[in-house]
Image (cartoon, rainbow, N blue to C red):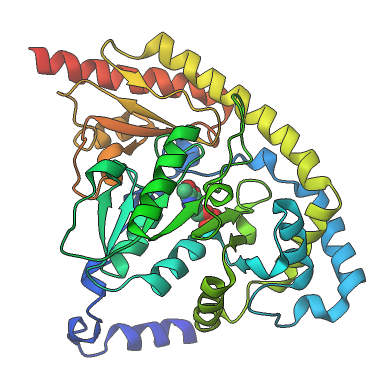
Length: 401
Ligand SMILES: Cc1ncc(COP(=O)(O)O)c(C=O)c1O
């Protein structure tokens, strides 16, 4: 028996305790991500997975990373390995500020845009408060809103706003290539959201990790550009550099950023410094934009391939969105199909998706699913859609019998 084995045996033999009483009152509101649970259960590389929201590894500038790291260490020396400012290193803040044409004082670097969502929730939400959001809702946002015990309601038309029991704090919106639907808001829809926020005198959290991944159609103004006085615009390096860096940013009015800055001090003191300098170097050297051209071409091809395959194989009565960018599309099946119930069968057949009802706070819309087209190898796309279509066709036939 090795020392490790002895220690393990001792740990396994401790007296059983009731741990439940230690958890805070927030804990029962925590929402597990079914998507992350899928990752734990299944080796996604071994099947045809349209489930996750991962970028394609070929879009990562892998061969440039050693040079970037060397250039950063040469330029900044030990500063790159030291703690940094809570707002982010000044060089990266300046680079983001110049990309958006805003003062540096309006830029806060975050340790991923998921942290951006969470820090906004933590700073603005009290238990019972209301967040207005598009329906369906990005799961990570739903998790944060729930964790702070806020209620999520669908954004009403501006002329149908009703006084409710809770306080509405902000509108959460993904204007470009929504996760999960892939939809993009028109200019009119953006203006309506701004009008609603002004009418209610509330904030807008604009979550925008996919904005730079446009494959067709015209670029529209951000909500922040339409309502800079009340919008927190969240950006991310995850889909335009690599998610492993866990870097994002918030652009917003200084008084709001000031509280976010204080809150972020207790989260992680500062965003990762070496990563920030590398992202900064990648951005300011022009390499990010050069890489983005290839990324967009790659994803456009994958999107078009998936749209063609859905057209070819999906059973009658099925429809799907035609996204102008991003990583996802949304499939609506005949009412009789239950994508939650079908999930294990699809997995056994070798194909994975995310059931659409997971993105609805009330678990409704069980005849929908989210498909990701960025992660799967292109050679697996056709076999995957064929498998999926076969599972759905079989379920439809069984319902009819
Ligand atoms: C809409 C949306 N917001 C935020 C995130 C989180 O991105 P990050 O990697 O920057 O945390 C994602 C990730 O998939 C997303 O789809």
